[in-house]
Amino acid sequence: MIEKKETTRIFGRRVYRYLQVDSTNKIAFRLAREGEVEGTVVVADEQSKGEGRRGSWWFSPREGLWFSLILRPSLNFSQISLLNILGAVAVAETLQSFLTYRPVFIYWPNDVMIGEKKVGGVMCRFRAEKDKLSFVIMGIGINLNVKEFPSQLQKEVTSLRLEEGCFISRNLFLDLLLRKLEDEYICSSKSWFPILEKARSLFPLLGKPVKLQTPQEEWLGYPIDIDDRGSLIVRLDSGVQRVIDAGMSVRILKG
Ligand code: BTN
Image 1: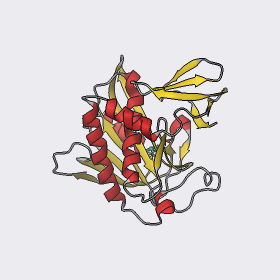
Image 2: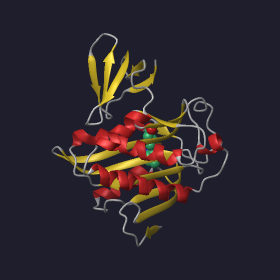
Image 3: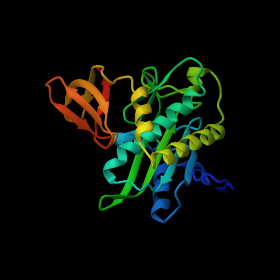
């Protein structure tokens, strides 16, 4: 079903709603390739093959919020980390507005956390021509009202429902989040500084010992900054400084 809202806003003016899909990212990618406008949203009640970062499967039962947003930013392909960060900041701030006591954090670049558990994630897929992004699909998954997780996930994930004990309307949350995303996106066309400052303040591991895991190796070090391209600067125990961008397959864990 397609909804068209008469609104001055761009994000969510066109919304494709589905009961069940394999992945909203896949549908949004196809729509974008066919010329669908910026701000279009694809949302599904349930995904059978939700995609997570680093090729992982994303658990997407009926009680969550699973959607993809089509963007056509004037950015270079090397700036994709910035969009991941923008998405994570907007998700964290929207979640925080529903939480009374517990702070929401970001684990750079895209994990949105309550305490030590992940409550949502953002991933950006894109198509680029030469260095320029032609379109980006920002896929967002939030475990909004999910009450039960498969046993292998239980230690690592949580939901707003489990943390706050109340049911949140998916449509209301989506509406608020789209407003936040659009405000940040418009603001970013003037300067990325405010978003990066928010990301730094939401990232609790800056200056703390961390473990960096890649499929091949593991390093120990200290994240010291998020630079102006959204990459994480890490000083390794060996003294070497590494620049890690969001596209790299690196997992950051508390050291
Ligand atoms: C992560 O690994 O942290 C990112 C997960 C992103 C999941 C969302 S759910 C909606 C959209 N469609 C997908 O298949 N994946 C993203």
